[in-house]
Image (tube, rainbow, N blue to C red; front, side, top):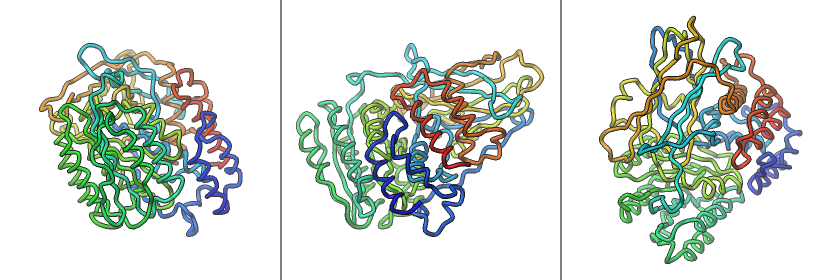
Length: 493
């Protein structure tokens, strides 16, 4: 595909992600794509300047040798939107961008809300594995407590905006301006917003301002944002944390929302130094969410690493609909109802011979960490669902529970002890829509990842499964996935 057509596709992608395929007509350009598997090896590839951490898949583990598996939850959705953006460019996503847990957790599943004084509820089931006959899938689910807007505590948001030269364009600074303006319309009178920009130097565009007193001033400041200069990301982040601390709301949602392409090229650019800074503030109850924009110089590895250490989430914004999804439709997720959330599965050797955690490669924890309440783990937002899958090889006895699923979490980051929820996984095989949809998403991810464990998985298989499991489809995102799978199939595999 010629570079001009790639640019056209990207501009259209930024403008619209329709429910008919989260991109509608711009996927017509995909038919002109060149061989997708070679695309990222070409020197003239416009996406070759991007950075992704290498994915090393979790292997099968013998239950007799190691019956226990532990991991942190991951509420991110960036990888899914990067996949959608890649298809808009006429390419399959870079292999190392395919984090299957983020594909799963992009979607809301039909899970029951918690009851009593718990802020999460857990569930689990076992079903057939579509890509390996004779194997099974264990689906684990967590649901964060749904909350009405009026019940969510006041927010102290620091919008940390990268307005360097690399952020210029309709798919970057112009896109984020539209989304942030929409978010302001849905904020409560007692919420606060401050805006800090960084491009060559750090500038406080707007002091922390109450929505009730200055919503129009906040929108005006957002509208004034322009892109130029270099990117002192580290210095800007320090300023943002100081601003968050200075306007800290006890019991409130104190959160930095960083909007960037991740191309830190001036100031504190070392990822390890940035991580240390983020970790030093997270224990004070300040969250960090990162929103990524643009393609070509996109630094996914840096942003994911930083957000993982900042008690926050990481999303990639490729179009206006995604901005609305994150900042409006799912805005309640910015309020964490469960903190430092860890999962542990204790497999029964009588029922399971081997198991493999699908995805979550950079969220695996030692079993000892599960017992350490001080160990950092992931957060779950209000109304948010978390899904994880294990591929299991059954043992002889299919009549006993294959595993025990336990989750530990904190109501507050400052809690010294964790709460615990536990259940025995039913032995009976399920054909619920939840497990069918999860298996379809995983099938798709395994193919795009070119996984050594994909067995008989194909794009056609993934399309068929997902197409049969979208009765529950808030936001029409499942229906959109079917369209994306059809676009991926045009590119071949």
